Length: 216
Image (cartoon, rainbow, N blue to C red; front, top):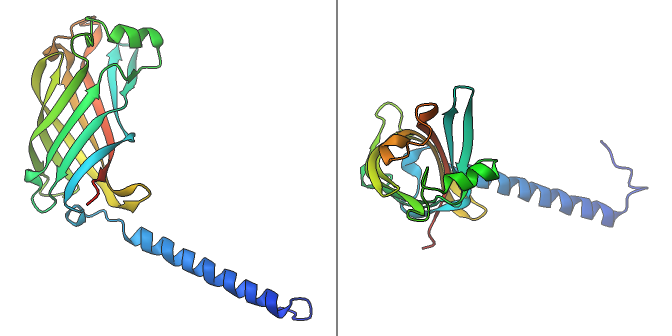
């Protein structure tokens, strides 16, 4: 395209050139930001991380009388991750789940879940998890098995979680590492027997979290 300088002043051409340069720099910055992300676990920064509560939730699902699968979430989860990519088995994951912060899309069920029929939050307001062993899949370094102990209603049982690494890098809010995971527990193992066997005993858990590296 040729510009007719009879209609575009020299100063206007200068502004167009400056704008083009600014756009070029912005585009370059976007490329740099994108290149800073990694999907290779060994490239993730070593250190202490905390879960971003706005991007960390546990979705649970359970069979409802054989008619459907009922789904809800735990929100405001708190978790800490001591991450050692060079030696994943030395990494440690801990989490605290406030049981009153359950979202089931039913106010009545939310209230019922707080009673002794289910979580008994008057006596056991939180559930906790602590990893005991982490092993990386030899065939797929993006995947790991996290063995740990879940304490719910004062009962502690072993839980195995299959975890997949998504990506890591610097973004708004700092340096982050993202994961998701799957686990299945039996609620009867923790003394939650209400409605059995009509209501499902197995509860499937889907965990997603963005962990932010601590400053310094």
